[in-house]
Length: 197
Length: 307
Image 1 (cartoon, rainbow over the protein chains, first blue to last red):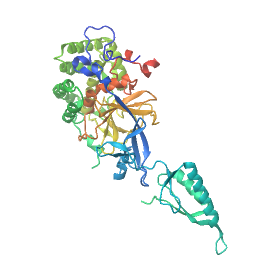
Image 2 (image 1 turned 90 degrees about the vertical axis):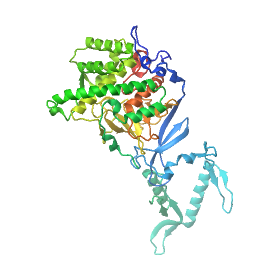
Image 3 (image 1 turned 60 degrees about the horizontal axis):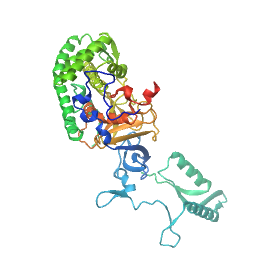
Image 4 (image 1 turned 135 degrees about the vertical axis):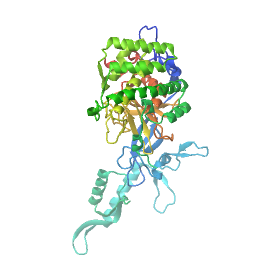
């Protein structure tokens, strides 16, 4: 049973000298008239800042699947609620402001795979399956063509100098471990990372 | 400039409503909270009356201070019926002197309280919320009014007595649990402060403040983010009802970072936003503190369903 408008703040039983908050001035509360106001439900979802390698914690306020605000996470051990100017404006990654000051979805945000073919000047939209397949094919081709089993002194090296590999500061320790493992498995030696603050 | 938690430590408290900046909070509420005039005048009157009462009480306590010296370091977590009744009679009844039905209702309530309990019966702080709910059942006052007068008077009496024994309202820096570090009660309201946005809980009874995680239920310690959430109304945007779908309970969170004053009085904000408690119960959530402002018989929540 839900409370009806009139049931709120009423005494149970039959009492003659009933005093409610209604009687001492909490008028609108007692009448339940605030229930006409719309409730704005929202969720707080934590994420990691995508910009640099520090990895600050961020709380996103999400309403109906749309981001309405972002702020620093005070319980995150790295930043404890503070953010740099880029991190503070993270909301503008998904929304920008038009001339009237309304937030509109950011038109510059890349939401699909773009591909520029060799010697082409235009970007074309491709699907993920094709992109991953092509990347795998080209890595395999380049590696096989440039693979060195023994160096000039006859020492076994099993490496390819033709590919370089860049890790990501957005990834956690375990993911970067897997990246590194995979790169070493292919025989890459030019492995670098952007975590260099 | 970053906000430092230690700023909250230096407060000389006269009553629970003044655990923070009294005047500034009243001004803020009269600008932003809807229908605050009558509540505000009641709060001001309460402040005036308690000032006189505090002087009188300080006199009494000074005489007995020597006797209490041994216990000075540990807070006394019990309150007797005699103390509570005396406070209700001397202070709360005076606040409602102009309002005849309310005044008579309080006197009737005190009489009933003495009828059902012996004078020396001690109330543990953690039993207070349940005691408040059960007491309203056999009184002519409604649940919300009983909650108002008993919680306010118990809070004032606790804080005053602790203060006289050298235990002040303070900020616990390292404590990170959901319940109050001093008296063990669950809090009813909290505030988000400073540039960092820490959530600071305040015990409604003893006024202790401590930091707690933003994304965690203080009662069942649920941290799954799809189970937690909050809502707010257009009526008072600074007040969020932060709820947990696991235990179906809520806690009030005042987000006042856009307001310049760093030390608001949470009790005043709480009294100014009682409609949020109404809305939360209407949505099916119970307060974490069990400080219920509704008649429990008419509330259908997980707690009443379990009984």
